[in-house]
Length: 275
Image (cartoon, rainbow, N blue to C red; front, side, top):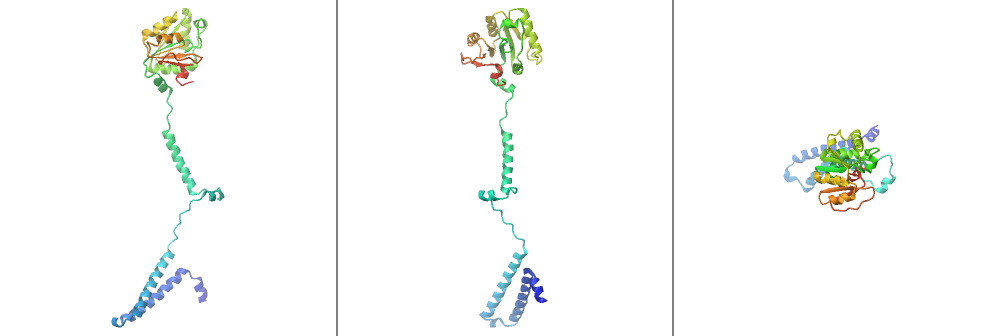
């Protein structure tokens, strides 16, 4: 019966019983030693006492270690070879940490990514803060390309409206064209009004000028002294290069730059980056 009980006892209980026995033995020895004169102690008695004390100390430390919960071992970083053999459904802690780092980096990249400028900012930058702009109608604002076509109809290009309205927000805009009769002039004004060009507040009908010759348009430009002039006639661009700060020459074919202050583009939408 005693054998079964001792076999079922835990290691901790056995150590406790061992300490109790040692304590009782040490107590007995100490009492017998102190009852004897110190002079009668020999080296063997002193060694026995020291040995017992050391045994008690080590036993007590072993008991403390057994009673404490085991410390968690640091998880070993998985090597690439082990990762390939591991269960794909379970991810090591490093993978989740890597995902968190990537998420933080994505937020930082998104926050500091370059902001795309608006069309208004591009227009202002391209015009170099120019406060006055003159522009031809035919081939730039209108679909038609000759005064003869204006006798039949006038059509505003829908793709140019956004750029045109942005220009009127930052600059004093004047539109001009050569026409053959009063009916053509009326058709142009009606087309501009229908397209909503006059509703923005930056352009009024009084700033739409008409003349009967190409030289008349050049004369308008020189009198107004704009910072920019936009035209399709290369001869006028060449003539005005000495008097106007900047010019934009618009042509379907790739035009050649005739002067350092004359820029070239297939359309004003393309020049301002909205096409």
